Image 1: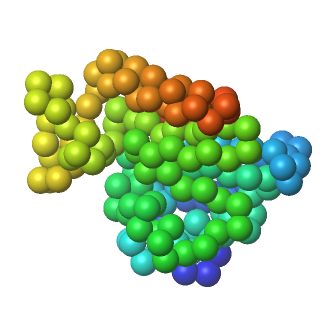
Image 2 (image 1 turned 90 degrees about the vertical axis):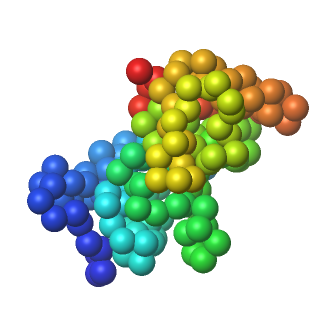
Image 3 (image 1 turned 180 degrees about the vertical axis):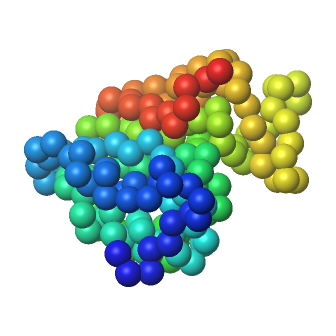
Length: 167
């Protein structure tokens, strides 16, 4: 756990990743595990990869992780460019990935969406200049339909991962 730094003043997150590891049931090397966010709770961009590598080394099976609202300090897509993981797949909100017989998609109404997703009259509001937020159930449905179409084209089963359900 060298160089792993936790958010100061948030005792609920002390030992958080260790709790995820301890909660594992029998998981085989070809089994999928899904983690629905808050993996790098307010860590710096330079410290976060150390925790993600630690998870990669300690979780069993194939792990698909969706970004959560407490992962806002980092972008998983940028981490993926610089770091190789053995069996940890990181998804930012709005991203999908095909693995085995599944297509996983990451959604949250409590996180950032790229501004390219923002549409006139969609109800999404701007925050910090280039990030958009939406808590409308129809946005979840739009994403779910997109994920289903993508999975059908590939002959795979869609799995929607949501950090928070729509409000």
